[in-house]
Amino acid sequence: KKKVLIAPSILASDFAQLGTEVANVADAGADWIHLDVMDGHFVPNITFGPDAVKAVRGSTTKLFDCHLMISPADPYLEAFAKAGADLITVHAEAGPHLDRSLQAIRALGKKCGVALNPSTPESVLEYVLDKLDLILVMTVNPGFGGQKFIHSQIEKVRRVKAMVGGRPIRIEVDGGIDAETAPLVVRAGADVLVAGSAIFKRPPYEDAIRAIRESLLV
Ligand code: DX5
Ligand code: ZN
Image 1 (tube, helix red, strand yellow):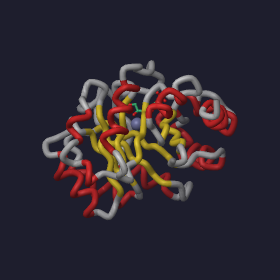
Image 2 (cartoon, helix red, strand yellow):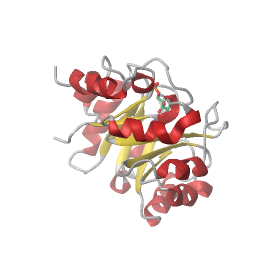
Image 3 (cartoon, rainbow, N blue to C red):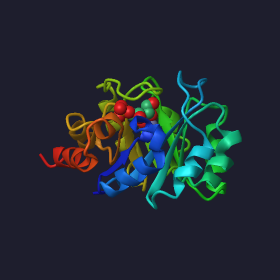
Image 4 (tube, rainbow, N blue to C red):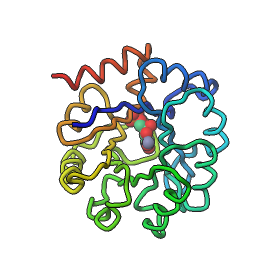
């Protein structure tokens, strides 16, 4: 069984000190750093772009997990790759051609993922499964931190897990993940937990990360 990884989302961090926040959460035991990119079009919020990713790249050697909530994503993939993204996740709904986006990420030498909004069925993954390193099941509607976990997505994680079978694909969940919800999604098959508020709004970060890890032991 794969080790469950914790990927703090810097969306909930102090943007005035982004580099320090990344370094601190990495030292506190984060496995990956989750970077939420929003364009005000695909989602009703705007965050940051490749220049900000590049600016904090020097703050840690941890894997940079870039979650692109932008549409279209293709024109910006190269910029995020060059900025230091290690894994680039695009939304299945971002369009126009998911398979093309995944091929483009691979051609840039990066790992690739597909994210599914809560209302999107897992069947959209059927023909791209063999091209994926990660599937991101959104457990809130994308756009904001601090939203309530959508319980219907636990069943989707279970179905995605069954679809993946023996393939070396990580299953990530994002939105409303804390010590209460983490065990539910891990039991269903998730092995990467994104957490924003549950870590950055509950310092010290080391204790917040430990609380999530310990919730998985019971
Ligand atoms: C939501 C983002 C998440 C967000 C999660 O659109 O994709 O990564 O930061 O925040 P919490 O953990 O607070 O729900
Ligand atoms: Zn995210």
